[in-house]
Image: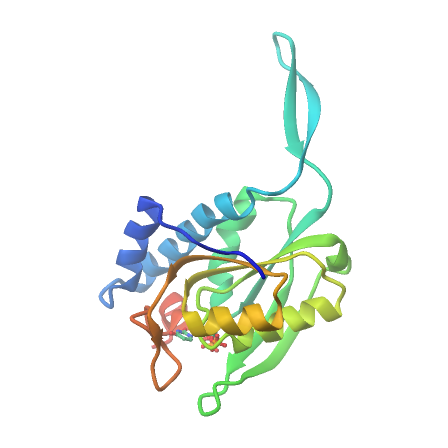
Amino acid sequence: MSNVVVFDHPLIQHKLAILRNKETPVKEFRELIGEIAALMCFEATRNLPTMEVEVETPVAVAKCRMLAGKKLAIVPILRAGLGMVDTMVSLIPSAKIGHIGLYRDPVTHEPVEYYCKLPEDIGNRVTFVVDPMLATGGSAVAAIDFLKKHGCKNIIMMNIIGCPEGIKTVQEAHPDVDIYMAACDERLNDHAYIVPGLGDAGDRIFGTK
Ligand code: PRP
Ligand code: URA
């Protein structure tokens, strides 16, 4: 079974408290999504393999470590996942970016696919699927299904807020995928929104409501 890592870091928790507040304006909300994603990325990349290299400093040769092996990809689930991409790419500038467009049908809450474009060599990359919200888990499972069909073998999920229902759904469908999240909330409400959550992540990032 996959690992689920829920962050208890004070900086992440502090930023999350501001993010959840319904009075937080769009600009600050968007910035916080990026900042939390960057802090989570720091930890979610902890197990990447490194190799020893020798570097000539102005003084002497230093034995250093650099990332080794497979290259990385970041795949946001549109729309809200886009909010996590820029700060992650600033930490991992060589990462390639794919896009998976899914929206939840308002009645059935099932994910509906409308756009997909992945790097050609995605199958050879460690792939971070990013989406602020893991609610029913339907969107995450559909995105991971799609990535696996395109040859991805090493997938890591990053969400800002999740809930037990979403975690269970992803773990049952994809027990090989580790999940990193800043908070695991209580439950889903009758509209499949996370409680207490932060509302509609896409609308709050893009100011559409
Ligand atoms: C939100 C969120 C996830 C999905 C989570 O997107 O960003 O993609 O819901 O819900 P689930 O776990 O029940 O599938 P939404 O469908 O609202 O689309 P948007 O990002 O375009 O607003
Ligand atoms: N999508 C969101 O944006 N928020 C939720 O709480 C659930 C799904």
